[in-house]
Amino acid sequence: MAHCRAHFISQTSALQKVRLEDDLDWYYKRSDSKNKKGHFVGAPVVTSFIPDNEAWEKLPRNLIIYLFSPFGEKALTKILKYHVVPDYIVHAEWIYTYDPDKKKESHAKGTEMDFKFPFPTALKGYKLPVHIVKVS
Image (cartoon, rainbow, N blue to C red; front, side):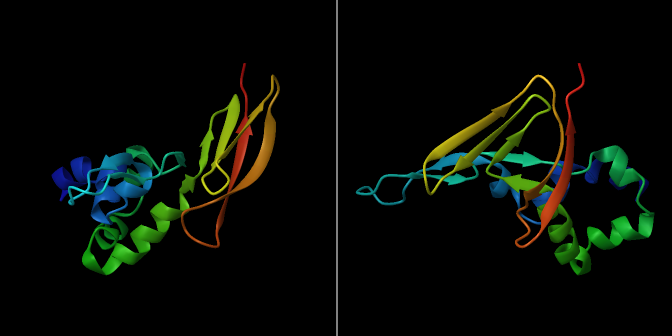
């Protein structure tokens, strides 16, 4: 399990395990029919706060085994969706939001930034409190 732990537990592996790649990717899907056009699938704008490998390694081994088992798939899905913020790109220097229904973009910029904001997550009904500080 140690070999598996070092290579399997990562953001990408976790997303693939619970099939959330499309929530973070945006790509053109060709139509199967000759008469129809293809369309874009996925998320054109998204920020992910999914923990890195170092954070995963701090979890107890039995919890990791559970999360990546068929029994823990629902819990892993909820954890990952809680860390995905659709329709926002967040940086320490600016925030970009996209509203696909209104086809509207907005930007927030500033030379000094230090604010807390609860971003809506891919886990419906939950917000992720994010504290953004611009470090010069």
